[in-house]
Image (cartoon, rainbow, N blue to C red):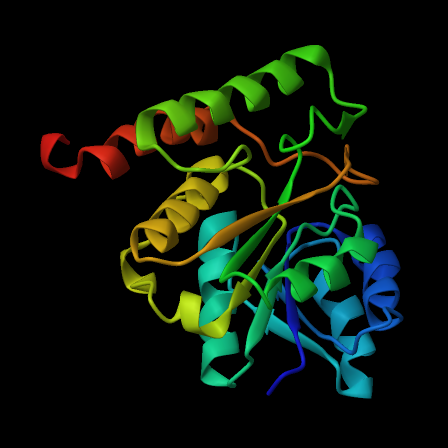
Length: 234
C-alpha cells in the first residue's frame, strides 16, 4: 500500500501521544500510525487503544521495557508484514516536528532513506544544554570519521524508509539501542547500496516526560562505530 506508516515507540508518553497522534492524522498526506508501547505504567497503551477505533491508529504492545532499538525493529517487522511501502520513524515527544513528515515522505521519491538532519545546515537544536549538544554534535563527527558515512546526522531518529530498503536489513541481527541503533541501521543501508538524503529539521528538546538517554547508550554508540567499520577486529 502507498499510505505511509509512522512508527512511534513509547514508554510513559501518555501526554505526548495524546497530543501527537491527532497531529499526525491531520497531516495533508494520509498516514497510518503504529505506536509500539513497552507496557507503559502511565496508561499510554490504553490511550492509544482508545484512539485506534478509527482504524488508522494501531497499537503494538510489548510485555516490558526492551529498548528503543528493539521497539523500532518490532515496528519494522509489523510494517513489512502488512505491505506498507513507506515507513517513517519518529519520537513521541515532539522533538521531531510532525509537520516535517510529508517532506521526508516526499524525499523518498529520490532516495531510499531520508534523514531528518539536525546538522546538515548548521546546528539546528533548540533548548538542549550545551553539554548535550556538544556530545551529539561531536558523536556525529566521530561517527562520520570512523565509518565514512556520507551523512552529518547519523544518530538522529527522525527517518523515512522505502519498504525495499528495510527489506534489505537482517532485522534479527540488529541488537543495538539508542544512538547506536540509528548509526547501525543507516550504515547497513548505505553499505547495501541504498541512497541516503538529509532533510534539514529543527530539533526541539522534548515536549513532556523525561529523557531515556543513559551513559550505557552513549558508550554503546562509541564502540558500535568501530564494530561496523572493522567487524573482524571486534
